[in-house]
Structures are given as C-alpha cells and as structure tokens.
Length: 496
Image (cartoon, rainbow, N blue to C red; front, side, top):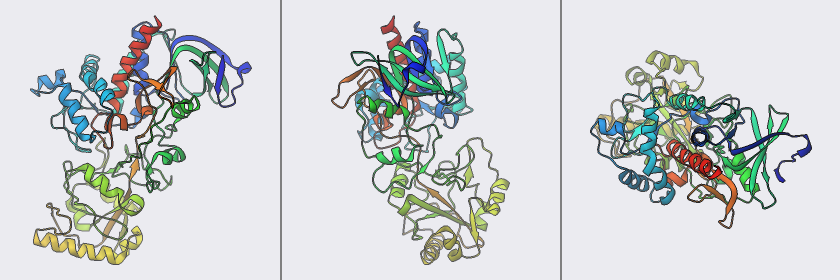
C-alpha cells in the first residue's frame, strides 16, 4: 500500500479494518450515499471532520426540486422531467453539463417522493415558486417547515436504521490522505480523530462528499474571476476544500470556469472581517415578490445602478458585480422605516417592525445621520453623489416616473430625516468549480481517465455542473441527494 497525504506516519495509525464503501463528508450527499449503500447490504464508513453530521444543511434553506411528483399531481400541476431539464438548461444559459444534469433531473421527482414516503415535513406552500433566484415556469420547488433542518432530521432517522457494524459514522475525523494499492487504485483513507488520534481504513471505493471551498479565501479566490476578491464568505467554516485538495494530490482534474454570481442581501459581520452575518440571524430582503421596496440602492459614487423593484434576480446580481468593491448601500429615511415592512428578515420570521426599529438605533449594522451628505460619509459613499441621487429619486416619486432606472414601484419620497443606510456586499456561498467526473461520478485525472476507486458527489463537483453560470432552483441540494442515492446503490452492488 502507498499512502498519499500530508506527512502520514503509517506505523502509528490504528487500522479500522476494511469496508465496502468509505464516504468522506456527512453532508446531504454523503449521507444519501451511506443510506442507500447500506440498504443494498454494503458496510460503510463515514468520516466527518466536524462534530456533527449535516454539512451546510445547518444553515441551508434546504430547497430541492423535482418534476412529476405526487405532490404536484395532488395539486393539479402538470410537469415532467424533460420539461424540468429544459428549464435548467435555459436558466443555466446552456452551460450546465447536459448529461449529468439529465441524469439527476430525470430522477429528482423520485427523490421528492422518497422523502415524502419517509415523512418529510413539507412546508404547506410546496411545491412553490421561489423568487430569490430566477423562477421556474411551474411550481416544482420544495422545502421543509424548518428549512435545512427538516431534511437533516429525515436523513438522520434513515441513518439510525443501521447498526454501527453496517454504517459506522466517525465525527471529529479529518481525512489527511488516501491509501492506494500497488496498481494505483484508491483503496482507503488516512485520517486524524479528535486532533491527535491517527487512523487508517480500507475499502473497495472511496467517495468524496466533502462540500465546497468557499470558507478558505485563498482557495476560493483561485477560482473567482479577477476583481471579485472582495466578495464576503457566507458558508460555514468547515467548507475548506479538503476533498478537492486530496483529489488534486492524486492528479484529479478540476474545472476552472471563471464564473461568479453573487448571493445578495447579506450583511458584513463587524466581528469577522470578510464574512457575512449568519443569514439564519439576519439578511436584507431584496426580492420584490416578498417585500415592496421603499429604499434606494447606491454604489460608492452614490449612484443607483439597478431598478430596486426589478423582478429578475440575475439582472441585479450581475449589476452588483460591476460596482466597485462589489458593494451596495441601501438608503432610507425615518418615514420609510415607519411605513415599510422590515427591511431585515430571517427564515424564522423573527424580525418584527419593533425589532427592526430598535436595530436602526443600535448602530450595529445600520448607520444614521441627519443629512444625506453626513450619511454618505458614514457609509463610505460620495456625499454629493448621494445627495443628487436622492433629489432625482424624490422628483421621480412625485412625477410617478423614474427616468434613471425605470423603477415602477415608487411608494414614497426619501426626505424625512434622520436618514439610514446599511451596506451589503456580494457574497459567495456555493463553490462554482470542482472535481471533474464521469457519468457514473468517478473522479477523472487531468488526462480525462478515471482514478480507480475514487468517486465524488455534491458540492465538491462545483455548482456550475448543474447550474451553469446562474443559480437554478433546487439544483444544489437535489443533485447531491439524487446522485448520492444512485451512487450508493451502484457501489454497494459492485461490492457484493
């Protein structure tokens, strides 16, 4: 055996023995691989570096998509996988991988029904249309009453069906390298448990389900287009690209598409420069489908750059990419604060008007000033530019016509001091690039040849493979589940 890793000392390692499948990472994709492999009779080892399973489900909205489902039929919604696939390709501008996308989309309706059969706690509004990103033509997106936690609870229940002899889950276990046999096949892993305890385990196949790399700025910026390095980090700290680095060390091919489309509406965390406030606590609601906009959005020159009531998320996301520092500043006044719905929200519905008004005065994220010019200084915006923009906007409100941006929702002027502002910076949440794989999810080397014994599923593949240069509803969580389930069954059958 050969050990490929970071200074691994073989003689000191505890050998955990042999399994049929080793899964590295216990997010949604890794859990689905383990569950389905065990159902076919495989012995599975799951190695998770954090102290709990679930990965990004702990902060995710947990939205997933599928066509031709029982829930659609019960509501009289006509849909099928072919139509879903065509919409994914349209929304991704033809840049999603057509074959891998079809492989997942054709079975995603079955995944939805599988969750239904397991007692998943669907939100009563599902299937629905989601307006945070570009919208499907028919309702085919689902989520739970407790967002990502609803998914995690179902998967944990399924995992608990198996004894530790069938599925052994090791949390607090950081994989440090791969074991290869004399022919170069990946045949196991090396790892460290609880920071000090060195272990090794062996298997016929190893599946990398380690998620993305966006919490590691150096690695993330390697894949971002030039000029996007100011993007905030919005994912959990564990997303440091471990699986990608391990596979690259084995010669794996990695995409480099140079694509970045920001998540908008997140708030810079004053206590963690470069990171966003956890959006489970707070985010800025920008979608007019969910809240009527009363504010204006300006760049560092104090100029508006997009109609605030525009219905295309992609248009505003791409417009933000063109602004200096990827920053936007949202401006309103005292009358707006009293009239409009709260600008800040979270998924739990915890932001009442009273809480928002109190937040205005706390000075934690929101700045205030008696004049537009003084507010601009506090926001880092050109004072003359902001003052001129507010004058033109107020004239547009009075005239009922916005000649600058074509905004049609003009509820009230912004001219009642004090004035308020909050800064939001483009954020990265999902890794766009990732490992390149075959149709059966075998990781390939830089010559396009499969690396024997090594597979990958989930965000370690990169979001571009299923969404191209856009965000497409449910095409992150659902491919991880759907392809993870299929991969688990296939690998278990191969090992039997």
